[in-house]
Length: 166
Image 1 (spheres, rainbow, N blue to C red):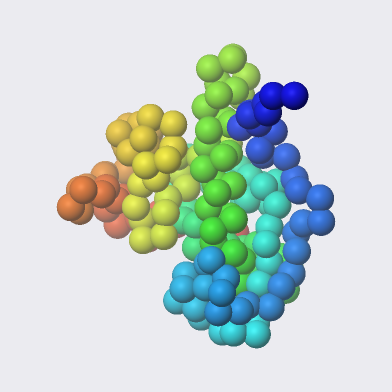
Image 2: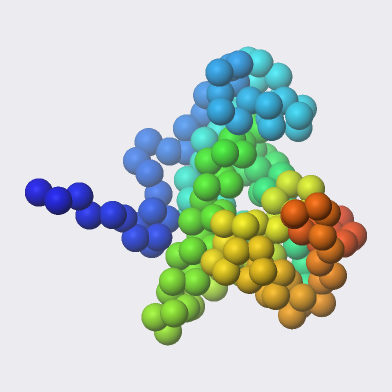
């Protein structure tokens, strides 16, 4: 039997057994990012489900922004833990973007304004549909100024437009 590659919508489905709370250990793939955000070995961290990430992305209004950091902080608060795995949450952000763009091509609207979600530090996401240029175009349509920093792009003064999700 041939393997059938999952669609973006299938990848966006919640995973059985998640969210899952674990103790942060040195071998975690997101260890460096989490310790940089204040978590320490032994702290509880949550591995989230796509639906939690998408729910936060949907709450970002036009003209406002959020970064992966704020998404993870909100999910950690929801679960009463120190941190949320940035690696899994980041994968779900990218998956949501591709699912939304795919649905739009088919004439459907998932209502996920993914372009308002930036990487940590205000950087654009090259894994979004259309790459950095596509991301840049959508942000500029909402009035954000995008600048180059080396080969990467970021939103100027992005902190001014950040939303805090409670």
